[in-house]
Picture 1 (spheres, helix red, strand yellow):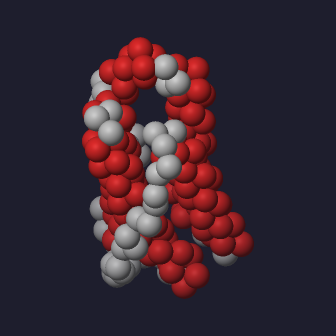
Picture 2: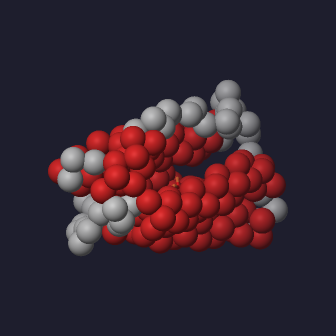
Length: 176
Ligand code: FEO
């Protein structure tokens, strides 16, 4: 749907444009982690992170669609290369949690700007992202916990890898 005919505050618009880039960077980062796990023969972990990358791409598409619905041209910037180095197979899990906390702070910043501008339409759109971020942080935390419980011995790691390999892609529950 296009043509909602409302004037979005420049700052909110800029932050949403930047968030498209941040979500695409998140996809890049998780794809990098997926590639790392492939190199470690942990195909289930690799699969899990590949789907995580796909989710991030979905997030970027949702924000793109929201901007386009608001008649705003989406300008794409360069995506940074992930400059992560992983000391061990637990490292991507802790980095993923840190990254999600960072993304939560970005979403919160956009929400604050929208609220300050009484842009309740954008606030309502971002409600979904706020709930999603809470879920993403919880999932990342849970994965670390499961790794600490089962990932330290080879049989437990094998089973955890198998379990993560069964993850399926879920379409975002938000429709625009
Ligand atoms: Fe799109 Fe994981 O934040």
